[in-house]
Length: 115
Length: 112
Image (cartoon, rainbow over the protein chains, first blue to last red):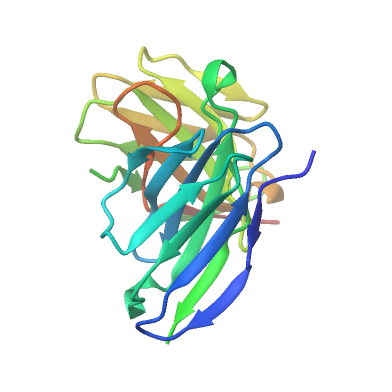
């Protein structure tokens, strides 16, 4: 079974630009979560989607947004990039629903550098 | 509120034991442990629910003290493959792993 796939793996943007990151969850998983990882703050929760609906949101500004498609694939978007947005963005999926065990399956992340 | 992990880093010889602690100032429903190797995705280790149940996985086990809102991860007879950064994630309500609040991590280095 293929794991969680994130694209692109690396990208460089400049301040003020916007970026879209993509995540394909494990087949059959309906829940997708996004986390920002930085050396100073560690892993911080951005948001979680289940069956195309945002169920939970972390404490990030409105520049950070996401969505989930009917095939469970998810995208997150960051607009008006700031230097502090440089981070590894991790996507995690889980089955959700009755089969949920709580275990998150993480992708290898998209490393964003903002210049 | 981000849980506090201790120690921040630890260096051990292969075969030694390690304990990593995770403390919260808020009442917790569950504690989740993950390990991340450099350049790789975090990998799930175990979940502990309130009630103090101790879970084990081979030579890695953990406990959850509900009164103290503290969880400890025990690595027995550490192996080189145990090296990595260990994160605890906490959840204050039930409903799965969405919205975990992670600690800043504990860097574990196992030397031969």
